Image 1 (cartoon, rainbow, N blue to C red):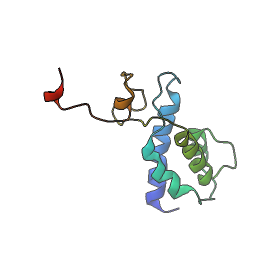
Image 2: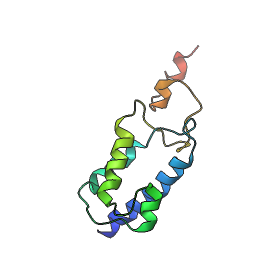
Image 3: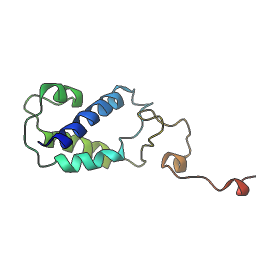
Image 4: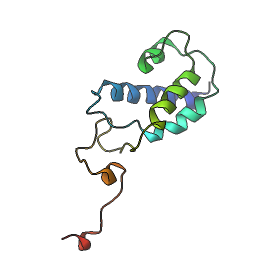
Length: 111
C-alpha cells in the first residue's frame, strides 16, 4: 500500500476510535468525509496490522477492504451528516437542518 493511503488510514483510525469511544446517545453520525478513504480501500486485500485492527475493532485476519466495508456500513444507514465542528460529539442543537450543516436565514430575515 502506498504511503499516502497508509497515512490516511492511520489518521482515520484515530478519528474512528475517538468516535467509537463516545457513548451512542452523544455520538455524532459517522463522518461522511470517511467515504473517500473507504472507497480507496475497498479492493485492498492486504492484511491489517494489529494496531489498526484494534483501532477499528476488527478480528484477526481482517484486511483494509474490511475497514472500507465497516466505514461504508456506518455511513450508509444515516439520515443526517456529521458536522466537522465538535466531531465526534453530536451537535447540541436538535434542529435537523442545522445538523445537516445548513445555514439559517440571513440575519436581516430573522425576527
